[in-house]
Image (cartoon, rainbow, N blue to C red; front, side):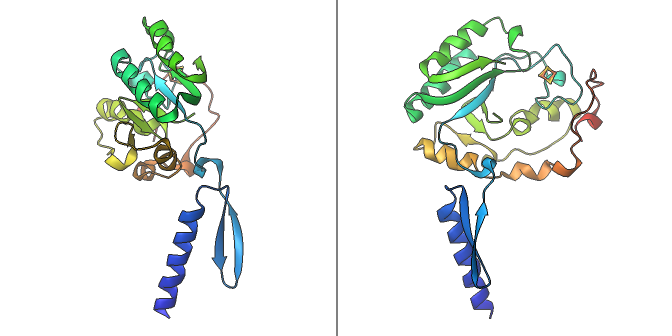
Length: 215
Ligand code: SF4
């Protein structure tokens, strides 16, 4: 009985893994096979899209900022690092990219904004100043808070851990598909996120820089 159960689980896992690149996966339950719809978040991208903080800090000071820009020290993108990262991603993608968002923080606070815009002209992509995927210092993160949690940790003296399985190093991958596979999976850092307790549509207010704005 136990062997049968282990076998069923193995088949189920292999089915999930082999079908993970489709919008649907087939699930065996009892005597029947079901199609399980994968949400967009879990479907690998076909073209890369990402955001990059041109400026970490922001002068607007919104309460509960997900980019932690309201508690960030003054910090600008390292243009040389960004240039190298873009060249590496351009090699991996053949220069094709869906979207690149130059973000912050407040991008307009960066005196080198024009230079940053020139860097991404290597890509055949739509881009604008102002996707959850974050490029930071040669690493891609699938969501915003994990990429900038060091700002939160520093400000509130916390130790939320970012492990090597929470990001993908763009200089260590062999193909863009490897990146797409990684970006379609949950990461260990997801354990810190309590979606059910998230309060949305709050009225805008100036931050009091209190931890209760985030937790
Ligand atoms: S404008 Fe955006 S980046 Fe700036 S503090 Fe508000 S939410 Fe954060």
